[in-house]
Length: 126
Image 1 (cartoon, rainbow, N blue to C red):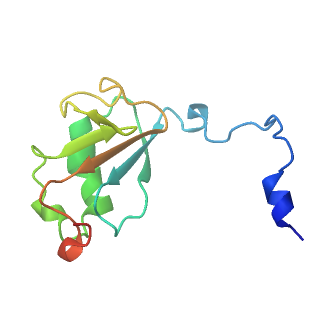
Image 2: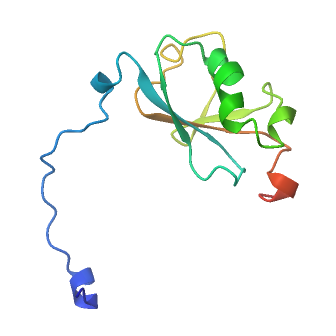
């Protein structure tokens, strides 16, 4: 049984000796990109996608995101020119005509987008 004293004095951390199974070498030329939609509680966490680094950012938005987020009633109303993008919590301005790699996106990067004026089902995030 764990006691309060055990929680206050945990054992020292040990070096991790295992080998990561999600390294880029395991994705056959693809890299994982996590994509999340801010202010939309229907999606509790970013989705993970295996994309080739040469894929155009615009193709992700026009061909992939509708399949992931399109069933949300706000999705059809997104003005992608007004969307605000974030990479690892910092403002990020993607070039839709450039590749993921050319946009500086690498394996296991996290990007999120916010859609001004769209705040979830019946304003659930406002």
